[in-house]
Length: 128
Image (cartoon, rainbow, N blue to C red; front, side):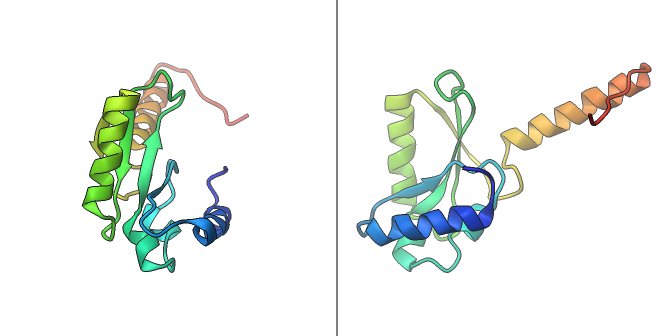
């Protein structure tokens, strides 16, 4: 699904209509505010809601960012973290619910540094 807040919220309303109480729901968003996606949803939904940002391609990339919200249940987070570690072989890091979390912020910073360095050596990147 594209990174569109309204589309994600629309899909989650459909999921919530069929979700059992206590069922854990996560999002693989790479930049949308996790708490904002679940804003206005029922309390049980918000307690069992957080982000799980898998890097592409997930079968080769080991890193998994878990992005809790202030309302996320720590036991639910621990359950998913343990599953992803033991069964999926993921290295887990906890990220704050900030724009682009950890990995993408580092990646963007690195790309901008390369472009700045290239420009210093006479290379210029065009937007086309």
